[in-house]
Length: 154
Image (cartoon, rainbow, N blue to C red; front, side):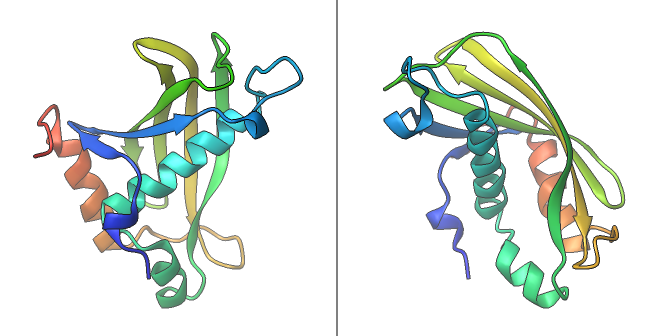
């Protein structure tokens, strides 16, 4: 069972902020982050955001017969490169929640510079791949994040 205390990052207002350090394994031959690794960074940030909000994905899968979030589509705009040893932050915001889908905006930043912007739509699905309604408890925890609107976590 996951513990919110194990989550990386923090909540600031309506955003989850997760630090990322760029290691050799994240880079290409020029010591620049390989483009697909930004998607790994954003995936980790989404998972840790859920964990920090107290949403246990493993328990959800067990309780709801294998139901889980799966990325339906993603768009990415690469604005500037990150390099070996850079300290980055992935900023995640929930922009829309429907019956079975979440839309999120995620920016990968180095200090105040946005390097990559992504838009992600994730569907809540069963093992059969069919959409399912997002459970009420999960909806409530995600809605609480969007209602924080600029309040700093203490």
